[in-house]
Image (cartoon, rainbow, N blue to C red):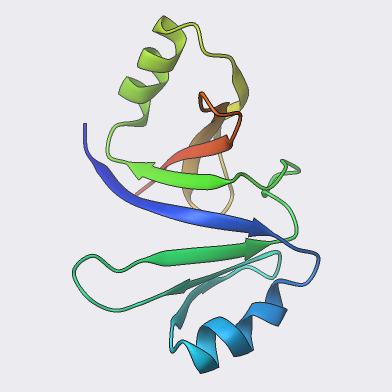
Length: 117
């Protein structure tokens, strides 16, 4: 199993407010915009990303972190085997991801996902 990326998520009622600071001042490129969530990324091999969201999608709360993996089923099995409660999902979302939410040992809500297709 490989972790492909980790994205910090910032809860906000106005994701577009991030445009000036993260886009214009820091020069990050807007790589995703669904209205309720906007993601900015740098360019390069290990391109960092950060997202700003009104909600977590599908009616879920905004997770603190999103971690994209290559084998969601394996991670889900490991989570269950460890006795960790799944708070949302697994579910196939309309925007092309399959995901579930868990809390890490520090209480942070983590969105574990894989892109479908």
